[in-house]
Image 1 (tube, one colour):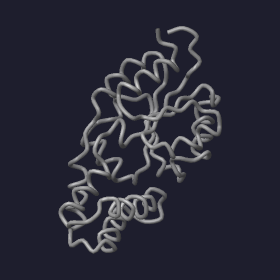
Image 2: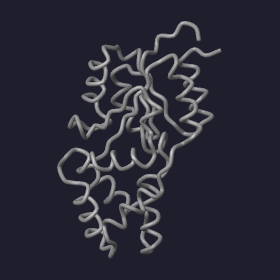
Image 3: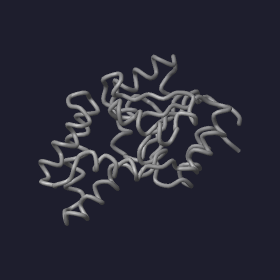
Length: 203
């Protein structure tokens, strides 16, 4: 590696490092009840779990309220178990992170309730792949925000140009990009690897 200036790489958790998550859960519920999965996703994830992730309601409340609004006769604990059951580690990404950990700090950035973050960590042990982890529930900030990016840069005493932020949702990269952070949209492992190596000046 030559001319490296990157000091920290931020990885989104769900949809990249962790496979499964809300889209698969919503598709399974939609199939079971013959509903549009995007409708389920909008209510379950975007409405109620976004509220839970910013401490407005509990994880239990998010499940109960979403299932009630969607009129799905499904126990919230069973729904949570279904959700956790889909989750697994993206091994290609995990192995790549192991390699770059020798040269740069790595941070897993998640937006989850404390209980879900803890439950999934116990199930998958994802923390071992990273230098640091931050669950934005703990700091009371929305994940895809300038405030969160500024919090991270202050914590690590780094400049925006010294950071790469990777996420599988384009809208989550906007705030970071506006601050001058290097951003990578995760679409596939091959594209991600190529773009990241370019930013890290790998030959």
